[in-house]
Amino acid sequence: MASANSRLLKLAAMGAVRRAAPLAANSALLSAVLPAIRPAAMPALFPAILPAVLPARMVALLFAVLLAALPGTAARGQAATYTLFPDGSGDFPTIQAAIDAAGEGDLIELADGTYTGDGNRDLDFLGKAITVRSASGDPAQCILQCGGSSAHPHRGVHFHQGEGSGTVLEAITIWGAWSGQTGGAILCDGAAPALNGCMFEFCYAKYGGGIGCLNGAAPTITNCTLRDSQALAGGGFYCRGATSPLLTGCTLARNHATGSPPLGGGFCSDGGSPILEDCTFSRNEVEGWGACGGGLYAGSGGALELRACAFRRNSAYAYASGGGVYCNGSALLIEGGEFWHNYSENEGGGLTTLNCAPVIEGVVFSENSSIYGAAIHACSATLELTGATLLANSAPGGGAALCLGCAATATLANCLAAFNGSGNAIHCASGALATLTCCNLFGNEDGNWTAEIAAQLGSAGNICLDPQFCSLAPWDDENWELQSDSPCAPEHSGCGLIGAGPVGCDETPVLPVSWGRVKVFFR
View 1 (cartoon, rainbow, N blue to C red):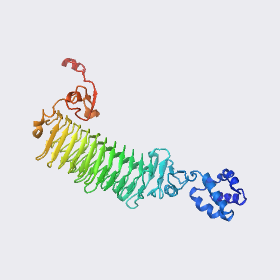
View 2 (view 1 turned 90 degrees about the horizontal axis):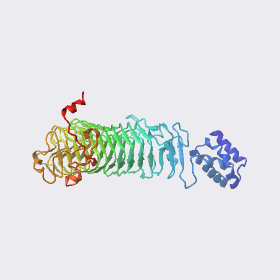
View 3 (view 1 turned 90 degrees about the vertical axis):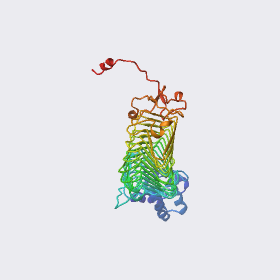
């Protein structure tokens, strides 16, 4: 760069540019020496040196032309684009240096590769409405390796200066972050940035190994993956207090909570009001005495909304509850989605609710397992369950589809509970009450309309008939659709669709055949 600078001074001293018109004409010539000069050096280099050889007005004009000619810069009032490379080449040596120099609306693009060291971790966007993204759009190829540990803690990004939706982090992986406080890869503290298509992997924090939200934070997180991370609470994600994050199309997988007790292997909301849409929770875990919410935990004082989300193979071990979701004192709305193959060693393989009033509509609970309430366990709760399908769940202690304890009450409308394994379909402990309307309980291993709910069969549209799924094994192929002649179809039930699955096929024809004819196929 020194040789380039001396060449530039020579040009100026020789009078190669004497006034505005010749200066503009010579900008191409001057550009020849610019690749060796970083934009960050411009403000310090030219005003400090050129006054010795040029008048002040000429210095200002020269600086403007040079700045316009530099790669990655734009005319005043226009957004600039800067390109960075992992080896420190490009327009700036580090990501933080680029952020420091960027103006509102600027774009910082990172070439593929792994960015390490100071200036490429513990990033601060300084409240600026700028975008930092990978140039390729593939987060797996553009990695911020934080290299964090208990001895050397390092986050990925700390948003804490009022950043809003104009502040964007996109298509980047943050790997190996470590924080002794909240938020391993990302901490949003009173900020609301947009995180798009990013991956947060193998990170750790006390709360929120992947992402943490505090003090009114309201980030918008779209199509991101949070996996293989760990925290005392919220292995993948943690929000506390008056926070309102919005997650859409995100995946939380293989995260763990390890606190005392562990809360929310994938996600923990401690009084927050998160909204999750079309998100998938897979193989998240909590383990330890009193563990709650293998996939997600929602604590008191908050309000949680789950729309079209899938909870698959999440687990809660060691006298634990809520393999998929545990709701304790929070408002809870679940619309659509599924709970499939979740497990709890104690209560609520799919969902446990305590001291709350959940509203659940159009959800499928299939192949969940626990001792009590394999699909749903409710205690001291007022539950509204509408248009749900509860299928092939198993709870040897009782309530394969639903277990009500602690004086809980439940209102079920247009629900289908069929082919559940051990444990009667609905179990009501002393003082608990379930009221059913237009429901079909059929083929459940330890009884359908039993004990406290037996008298409701045959009234209020309640039936006990084969639902006639399109699939012979809907719990295996996850096809909840009904045959057109199903007693749960709107045309036949007398009270609309029963269950979460729509009519999806014509009736299956049955051909009478002898046993001898059947045996021919097995010779």
